[in-house]
Length: 228
Image (tube, rainbow, N blue to C red; front, side, top):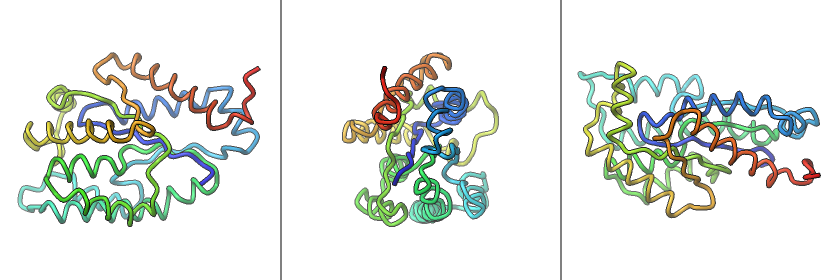
């Protein structure tokens, strides 16, 4: 794939959506990135999310996250719905963009499934890995920005925002297990996952991400961005 897939991960309330938007806005003003776009090396920069990055995904997102007390959603059914959303997302959005050389900024991807359905729900990690491989065609992303935050602090932020979705309403123990899942994934994938202290002020977090992206731009496009 010629393009780059950059994923934002973290527990509830870690600031993924906010920081994704800030990075997208920052990249659009960066001379080095503008140069790549002007030359047609990076034709486009798009943002998306899981679940919900396609029309089908929007319907699946409603099933997964809207609070429907009269409808109990089992853990395995939940896992399969996330896999279906991802498979459609890969085929319809991510692969075509990457093949064109574009950048895709994605709010959640495979690590969320491992953390939430694996560590949080207690489902088989090997099963989740198989489903992720099927859904993604082996794509794991070029960089994962993990906004590291304690689960209880993240939930407090979510509550201050207002109405909680179905996942946010799970108990603290569940979210602590999810947090542990992200911790383990980061330890096992240091080349892909970069941890950012999400407890810091929003501007500080954004600056830390920008530093990482400057480094990645130079590494990924060395021959197009001379250092002189």
